[in-house]
Amino acid sequence: MIDNYLTLRRHNIEVRYIEGDEASAEETFIVLKKALVFLSKYFCLRDPFPPIRAILVPNRSEYDRLVINLLGVDIEIPSNPGRIAQPQKTDIVFLSPCAYKDHSIYEYNPDEYRRLVFHELTHVFEEYLTPDMETTPRWWSEGLATYLSEQWRYDDEIRQPVLKGVKEKCIPDIEIIEASRKLCYDWGWTIVMFIENIYGKEMILKIVRECNNGDVFGILGEDCKNFEQKWKKWLLESLGNSTNFA
Image (cartoon, rainbow, N blue to C red; front, side, top):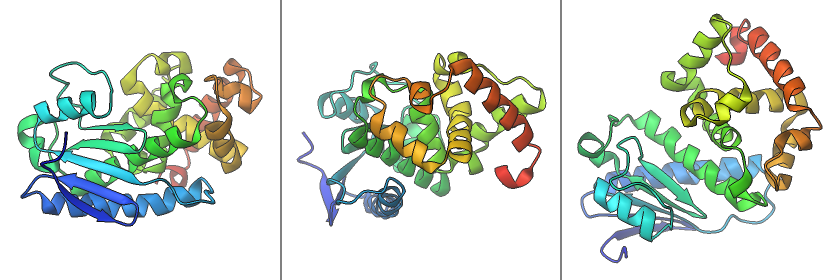
């Protein structure tokens, strides 16, 4: 299925790519290596993480083919131009940065690409560690990946909706966030940040490792509405302190 791809393999990371895309492959490997070290430490892994494979594809049709046939993920054909990465187990299919111009809505930015790779590897770690990824709320998964990759800190597309919403005192309810893929990216990270700040990093690890029915609030020992009120209050107060959102 990817026999015609070249291979960059070091230690437990493999990057598959087409001829001429060596620079993107090397960049992807470097980011995966750094993210692997960080995430292994963050999630307190005692044993080495299983081998990771990233495949850089040269166009939209090849992206769709591998996501469906290699990863087994059902997506629309042709897929949305906003789709540029798809993880499944320990594989990640990326639209190569060299294909962004003709096959995506994005322009290649090295820093944004590095954060994207980090984001997708966070999903891989969560799927590996969690009892049932299928029941995990989308706001939690996207929030965790956006938070740990620090996309919230540097990417205005993610950061600005929160700044605007808090300024206008218009923070959506968690139920509304969960119903919108975009809102999960925009606001999910603030909920994860709140949990880590108030309940501690150990609670983040507990949710990832023990949430087998999607009930994050049950693990927190909180009623959803009470939690929501605390989170909104904290968010309004924290945005008044620039050091928390630098």
